[in-house]
Image 1 (cartoon, protein in one colour):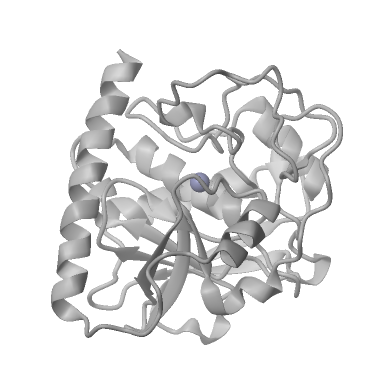
Image 2 (image 1 turned 90 degrees about the vertical axis):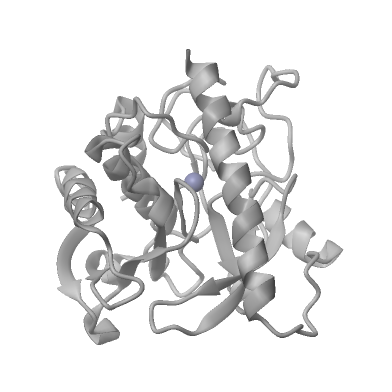
Length: 284
Ligand SMILES: [Zn+2]
């Protein structure tokens, strides 16, 4: 049943990618920037613990209408101009379950002011607004040093994180905290997420997942993306190196449940698992 749902999801996603790319090529003049990631960029991403099986370069809209060139792997979206802000990773040791990125949100930046965007063209839908409030409530319910406040509007000057809507299939995208200790700033939620097939809980799940990246979570299954219908051999334990940093104190299983699995399905309840809570409380 789950496999069938995932296949349907893939069909939707594949359809979207095709149409999005067509749209882009119609509207854009050719740019001198290569559309294939360089070997150097791929090595950098791999060193950051990002799966590099299918990395593309895309133009990403910011809510003020400007665009940035990003390296995109699934829902991980890193500005090319900001790539130098991510250090190379240390080598992984020990068992693995929940993973974090190389930088966390620094103590002075842990009161995170989230702006839910309402400006024309990139405004969150009503269900996305509700999903954002629910996801943030989940983070705020944890006994740790992260604290989120949400406002809705278009004034970015007082915001640490801006959540806005872009064209695209079901899902969203975000980056990681950088070396300055600030959380990832821009969280994109795709228009294709707010369709009847996805409940309010699924929308909560995706927004909570993207905020998870923004405060330092990597995918629980980053090494093979098994939740995305991976069909190759399963490793006894992750063997890719260098790799994402394991969060000590969390268990490991290739089929563990987490809000940070790479792919989601229609049955997500939007809530943290016990190990998600452990991981966040250990980190913060
Ligand atoms: Zn993700």
